[in-house]
Image 1 (cartoon, rainbow, N blue to C red):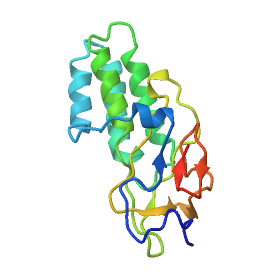
Image 2: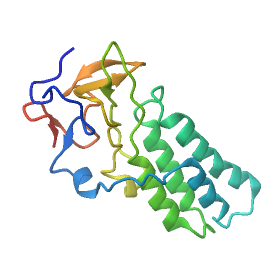
Image 3: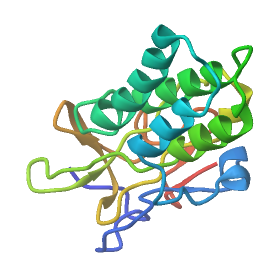
Length: 183
């Protein structure tokens, strides 16, 4: 499997395909290294919700978010689904730190997912091709991990495909294989 010529400059990339002229490019901010499961747990603890079942729900989102959604085994949309759940939780009545939780969920959504070698190549991770539920996530996508092969996408559970195939650009954008850019 070879990537389109515009994507294969014989180097690895931290953003296998570039988002250009899209809402995602305009809205993207750098996800902080401090976006962690324990950070989400701290936000849950200070949310003002005293009900244990609701606290448990909040904590489970963090465990799912870091334990599975960012893994190579997860579907391309699981991370977005977790971020949507975080934002929906933050909008519940009585949440004292909803703005902080929403900002955290947006930063979480931008974290890179894990990438591993598949048949001798470390492909870029596929993008979710469905719209988010919450408008705060519109145009927000996961970063690509450092060291992935530009122009090739896949995982151990999804065959490696070249840029231009389904999932190689985020929802709302289209691939331009001549430039290796999602527009």
